[in-house]
Image (cartoon, rainbow, N blue to C red; front, side, top):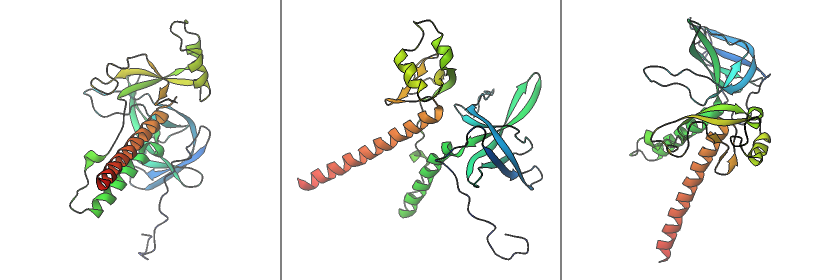
Length: 251
């Protein structure tokens, strides 16, 4: 509430943007709290959108993988959290910090996590909450949350470098042509999780060029295609159950 306790709303509800993403060169504003708990904001420029090289920790613990992060030109490192907004005030990402060891020194680097990565799962949780509210006896079950994953780690390979490889190692001209139509890079598998869906199917050094017949060149495109495949499978399953129920009714 504003100072004085007038009871008026503090501001408008935040809008999370999913359709239009930030691009290199765009101006944005970071809004959050400084270490003293005071509001902080600063106008920044997006330097690039690229696959982040986040260090794995030992002992193993959670860390970012296959994240195409928003890299800022001058990211404030004193902020522990915040959001990135575009020129229209829409939230385009969450600001986060990572710690990297460089030449015997430890440095903190800020980056943005695009909202488009998180919103599909937020929407799932919202749908689950609505379903649980309509059926009080059915609690919100975390196991209902679907997070499709190939369980591999990607790195990016540039198409010009692949074209210079020997013929026996170089991707076919057909695939190079298809990939060049959507970008200048391709996803290369650098690790495969044992027991995962790609175990014994893909190997380190393989190139992922398409998912379900659709050409992909970014981790975000892979995630979008997997989520689409899950939605289609659910719709097909619901239709099968409906057809079965109608058949039983007719009989």
